[in-house]
Length: 271
Figure 1 (cartoon, rainbow, N blue to C red):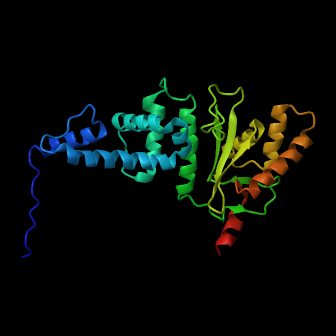
Figure 2 (cartoon, one colour):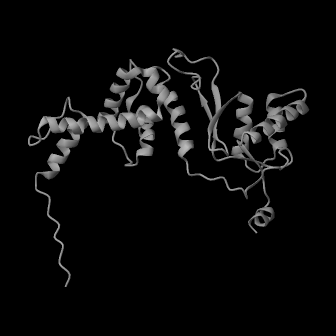
Figure 3 (cartoon, rainbow, N blue to C red):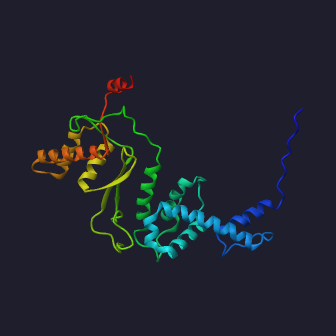
């Protein structure tokens, strides 16, 4: 018979020691270290834990780090570690955990810039698109299809976003204290060269993309005609002509993949 493997049982105080260990490296100012671990050794774990998380997030949110400066960034990281419990063990998803902390737990604090959450979201979107494993199926869209007569297909790697602040312009030397009167509309997308790009758009373009996403059976002409009616434009043909050029530009940028293939055409593409 094979030799039986005996797994040693944890000592009764082991769980308590683990909790004390984790609590201390998260919040060393409030939580005591385990009695049987010397401070020098605990210091190694404190620094490794904090610096690894801070360094990882600094890479995911480089503009936010520069805007806050090192002192405020360190304070943000400490409060994140103390107040938030991550639901994932995956390092690539820690950025989303910071975003959840800012939006759901932290709230707006006196020392926070008013655009903190929106800037963090914008930077998270860039990272999320860059590492996304979503693939665009080439059989779903004809890249050369007629965008007016056909149904435009928006890339799943193109996100239509609106912010109160112009997040794409914010930096250490440009930190607005108040949001402008108009919202900032952006399309953030990953192109076929695997680069994440952004395009600032106006409210009409955003409405066009929204209509295409909300009703995936409408042709380009249907959507542009609906927009002309919403605007009560005296010359709808002008709206359609301008919209056609916009659709072509979005196709060139890989925001629009082309026009939806019919089932028969998609099957032919598979064969």
